[in-house]
View (cartoon, rainbow, N blue to C red):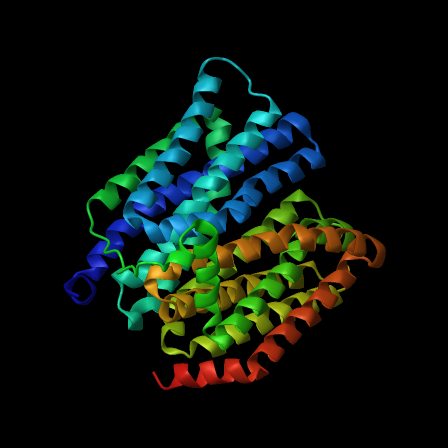
Length: 412
């Protein structure tokens, strides 16, 4: 109890500082690998497969990883995951140092293995937060985490481009190893309590049974189930649209690569602003109001983007920033609702199930969005997607179970 009430900030800041180095190193390596594949192959198919290799293993392994997270020491799992990802980067660096130019399939394997490491690291970190911070500070903490994620998403590609311009690929990979070592060292300096675990009944032993138990834990709150479904549908609609931002810049506005970079920067800057808002103003707001409002804000940004004329590029840049702001406003409260509602002993399983749901929605959405946008035009797909997401936000706020959850949050 003293850890939460007296020294939780010191514990969290120590972990936070170490993870900042690790996340930045990972973002730089991720960008560098994609850029290397782009320069060497120039193939859209190669980049698509690389993208799938980067998230599909995490989606498939996630539910099993969550079960392991809830069984074992979460700090040790985070350290092991960081070290595993570092070893993968080190192996690739050794290939470059030996003068061997790795074939494309090696990069697919590297991205896939890193994705597996993330499948263990992410739920361990998320499930540890409510064991460190008091519940009334969870929104503020989530704001800090979102701020770090946003800053890394802005700085990672720029730093990666700079390092590749002046240094070798192996240098970039070795910096990632150094970041993982610093993150692990920071974790060794702190104590992260593990939740009390109930002994599973005879019929519930085994990984598949424990995954089902995690699902049952989530379903105890009908409002949370509806919100989880709403976030899943939002991911299904939005993620494919996000992949079409560059096509919108090129085909609708008639702009080039530099302009696409400006749009990406505006979106990332919006995420940073949204994260700061979440950690300050948002910490005092109702979580359910923030979540449904954030979803609707994203939809409005997409809707008005699709209505812009070919001369409205500046408006698209501004709306991209607005869409960036919306992300933390619904992603942060959703994470906090899970952390505050779910039994800490089952939180790793639930977080992994939810993360896998979001990731699996991505390829399904891409299969739908690509052909449809090709037929009706990318700008029309934007405003149609915007309407769908606004309706998701409005419908979610009207569901009785969500309104009950909203009222419960208001009374806290």
